[in-house]
Length: 154
Image (cartoon, rainbow, N blue to C red):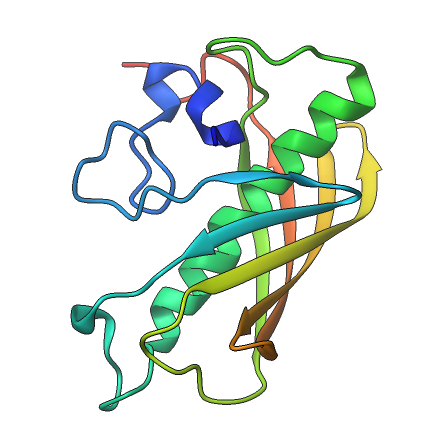
């Protein structure tokens, strides 16, 4: 299934977390699941913090990219944009707050679910929860802002 990140223009597609053109990146994909957004990722052995558990910085990165992808989805929905190749709104993180509730086990697929809390002009607030084995391990809040279409062009 394609995520919103698959519709970012090429100059927005190099993010380590979600850039489709970053072959060494995580290749995160975010999409709607009813009224929530969802991203799934399975960490590998090289994502270890302590044997058997996922590195917290990776978890924050996943929440971060899920938040900006969710914000892009929310802006597109709010504006009635029919997403086609390379016309998706693009957001960056203005604020990231992460709460580690319990150690995240290494091995199972991680699922991040987002709820859009606010859409106001170019700003979107996303509340996220990262789930492993049916348990919430990390929560977070991302404040994302839309950037101009030419942002980051060389």
